[in-house]
Length: 86
Image 1 (tube, rainbow, N blue to C red):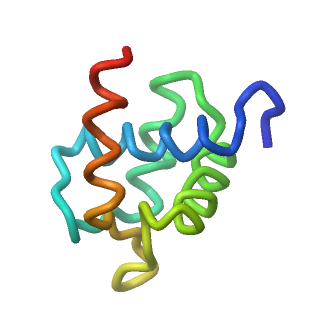
Image 2: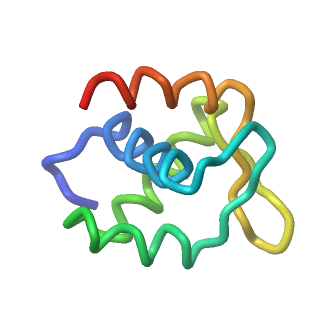
């Protein structure tokens, strides 16, 4: 895990991936979606994976089918502040 990012920062990075794919509540993404997206932003894939785990604690993500990650309603609401802050 990269020490320059807080757990909340990493969870917001994971939200950015959902935003990139135009995800809505209950949409799921596979691990390779995150692993492919990370280098494009200069992020380490392990930071995104840590962000997903922290996001699960926050209620933003949950386990989806076939080892995917599902965006929750709570997580979807968090995407808008992420969009306007950058």
